[in-house]
Amino acid sequence: MEKLTNIKTSVFAVVGVVGSVITNLIGGWDKALQVLLIFMVIDYASGLILAGVFKKSKKSETGALESRVGWKGICKKVMTLLIVLMGSQLDILLGLDYIRYGLIIGFIIDEGMSIIENYGLMGFKLPEMLSNAFDILRKHKETKVEVKQ
Image (cartoon, rainbow, N blue to C red; front, side):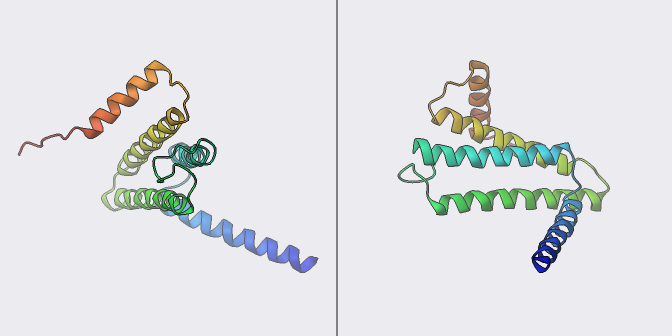
């Protein structure tokens, strides 16, 4: 039993050290990162509910749960965090403090839009203000802006 306790303590220590290193590299644990991670978890959970319970996912042919789609979702979340890591390192290199925050805010908006879309696909009525904002953001995202040189 004591050996099991030692193994458990060692695993927790390794996870703690690795988590600390990653958190430090990504710019530290702050409210922005906390909100992004909460939105990511809510988005993933709402996608699971949409596919598993309502069978209305746009990401699978049948609309039901598919492990491949779930893994793609996890890979997207990991890539999001890697891009935030890149932004954090660019801030350090350039002596700035806004690239990381700009990326995090952009990803929070993206996750939020996905959560709202999942909520609507479940058949729930969105508040009109939220629905209008979502439509504006969707149209803005679809509109191509010409860059004048």
